[in-house]
Length: 179
Image 1 (cartoon, rainbow, N blue to C red):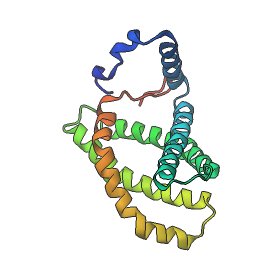
Image 2 (tube, rainbow, N blue to C red):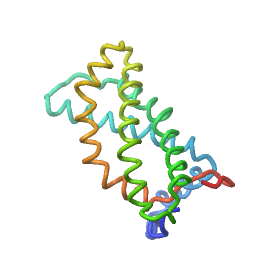
Image 3 (cartoon, one colour):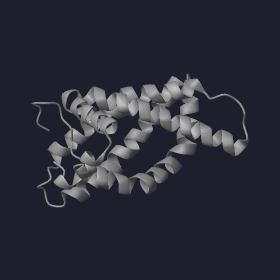
């Protein structure tokens, strides 16, 4: 498990509604970890796509409406892929590289960055291609032009955050389930 330093110390300082919402969310994580993470991931993925579309429209002075199908694709991907897959990957990592193993923090980070990140990105390109109704040649073209730059950006942007996530955010398993 992650160190106790990851606990929310300022929880009691939160106003009543956010404190209750956080408590409810944490309870749902304990009772229904996969479903709660799937819902959270779907919502966050759709919000990320909404933000990306909004920024792109402002940069291009584009007045067209939002691409709702894009929002739905990201919602579906987050719900059915990101949330559940991440949950089980972190359980696997906790089992395969327990915190007591020498250099566990480094080994976990390397496993995430060198195995999980490329595989996850490949899966992202494949599933988005399918959800967009594109053929294999479009997927191949996208992989050739976009995979390596996307993976490099992923490594630059997410490596520090993943170090924190892997080593300091407590693993949430369902009640009675041991990681």
